[in-house]
Length: 164
Length: 351
Image: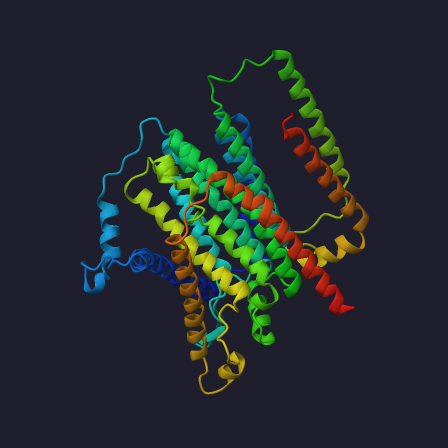
């Protein structure tokens, strides 16, 4: 067993463990913090795949911005166990079934993939190669997704604006 | 990448890490002293001058005082998070120093050593990412204290840092357009070869970056998270003893690191002004050039630190709505204009 394998196992255990903790915690602030740890473990996996750009962007966008906003909202609402409303049994079942079917679809999609990426090989993830691929082969989808983001932003502003 | 354990490399990097961390801690210690002296200078007082010659031992006395104070953990706080808050603030503050190049290269024991802890391929983004994590220390600590004033301070810190990160990121994009590179070492080398520092190409970008750096460090005029006349002590109201010391210390280390980043990105980093460093290293001076480079970077850092203090003791604090207006309605549009102008000029000259 070499160092890379040990790191891989460590990061996987960390990611899965903190993800499970995230779901099972009663206190929402603790859940958010466990989710942050999960993001870090996933970023570690990206670094092992030599995709430094993806790793850092994952940290900046998810851990650094989105989760801070989540934490912000959770802290401001001051959610705790006493304030949590009793959930409907039916709703819980519906949640489990829809979550399970999503998992099934994801698993089926992942089983079909070919060309597994080996740890420690390839330099797809370096900024230069990523930029070339993104702006040559995938320009149109890239630009369309940026328009999508813009419309989402405008929508958020419209919703949050007070009606006069 | 397969990781191979190389003992010599590990020893090299470990000693580099120890030196860099200890130096930043030492500078931070004396920055607290310098802050009081500069405040005294600006207010026409003498400042601390009782402990040791010229008061030079004052920071040690302050540190000892913090260590010996009683440590209080509030009854209703979440104990673990209460402890981890200041630790996280300190950790993220120190982690940024890993990507900063302190000098070119030097030879020790027949080994050519690059004086940078990690030459990250995406250096700027690494620093940007770690800085954005700094807010966790404040938020976790403030929430775990179970005090409304602390929480208000923490929420202010979070919203302020997120707002100013946007303008900072856009000003960095303009800089990256000019340099075409994300690694900090490459950016410094480019500035050495060009003879012009990046601040000449990006004056507006530098101004925006500097204002955002002030906001990210929670320094006056942006120190609303700890506005004492509104929030008692802000996010560290409940903290005492060395935990409190860690929060204060992390602020000073953040100042040092952002000064180093500003010097590296816009003011040539370890480049010695008016001299060709590479020629000197070939010539009689040899590896002593590396020492001069470190001193040069330190001189630039000290200049920026003085600016931080000068501003703190000159300009009063913003009101909260003024802070948000400045961030969202002035700095972000300005940064966008700067980015468009930079892109346009580069396109025009490359045609």
